[in-house]
Length: 380
Image (tube, rainbow, N blue to C red; front, top):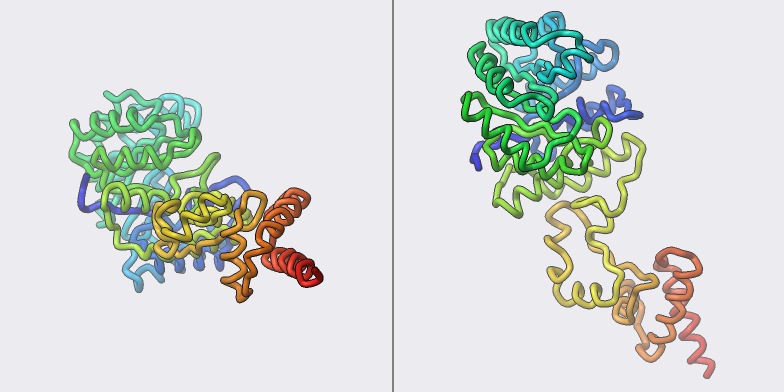
């Protein structure tokens, strides 16, 4: 694995292409600032050719990035007008989106491979003559013959491209197959590679890790894994996997991960599901009696890492599966002097209440149950 890995966030470009999501200028800038606070140094800002408020947001982000020392990429279609426009805005790094599979060439952009090789070379040379960093795609690598990918890699490298993005556009690759493609390309060309994995089969994170193991330098993520169709590799999952399984430190502020996730979720107006890995509220929540007993004694018994690392919070939940120790722990933590003689009755009442409500109990509901049981023994 390389020691010069670069995380590039594309929440503001591919993430925003999630069906139903539309960020205005204020929101895009707020997300940009949150990413910078988390330590992100590379990101895609959006698509300048869209114009309007999108362009105004991108221009403002570009201005802020110059002060923040962040590398912001302008995404472009594989046409000269887009590339010229992004360069005219002063971008020092651009991406050129072009497909390599016959299905995309024929049915999406109505071109052939001869056109692709010529167009890619000409656009790269034009941009490099302007002194910018040039990233270019091989879109739909999962349905492109490896021999052609090798040829394409050699040609874009010879034209001067700085980076080749290997896009699993419809998320059909397995980690093994993605690794094989990367290894084949690396055997044919020395150009830096970037992973861009989609999550249609739930393998975006696994494929990204496989790509990194196979030698890519750059990789894409989005906050909460948002993106087209089933989304992209989740920021927190990839970062924490690299840290815990490979010992890779990307110099990020990991304790910002939860707040970053919650902020972006608020902006796209869909609550983060509680069991979302790394940053979901249930990741450090415990209800089962056995789990609570273990966690109270030693948090590592049922937690892979401490919530403080990612800015999360540990919670003991009171509900159907709780035990007496959990009830005592929560009450005492909230200032109640517990009479242990009534804990068994409290437990029965808690389970009955939780089942009737079909949910966990609030602190006030737990206190009410305790008070009711306490009054009963006081009367006796």
